[in-house]
Image (cartoon, rainbow, N blue to C red; front, side, top):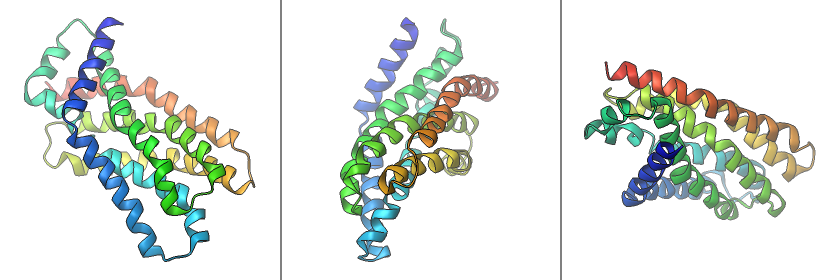
Length: 222
């Protein structure tokens, strides 16, 4: 457990030291949410209905911006090979780096979403559900993104490839996250079933992703 916590602290410190990645993601998130109402028009009822979908899609796109650097920095300075040959299993390294990405990027973006909901006239009753679904669903984005980041490591234009790989696998997370929030907003459906499915997707991703990431990293370092 100590190696895992040490790796987690290390990656969180690196993320805080290099604040540009989080700043870029948050700036992009704000920009997308602020621009969309201009294109959709002044219909507040329309904005309110589609606000959960806009916030979820914009958060996903924002989180993708920092995924290419998840393993690139360690690969460039040789740290990745040291971690791969160290005492800690590579699966543990992959889990720590994925969790660090979630804590340093996905969680701040999720906490930012309720404030951006004001720009979209989101119903106040839906704010707790929105925050719960984002916190519960974004681990899937970080851990699935880690798999794609490992698969595209050392490839040209890896950022574009990561986007093409992550987006299709994130569709179930988006669907259930939006359904759960919309259920509370409209009152026409139950919040529990889609939220539980969302948590199940995140749990499966947390369990499977470190194994897949470790296998992909071993292949890349051959």
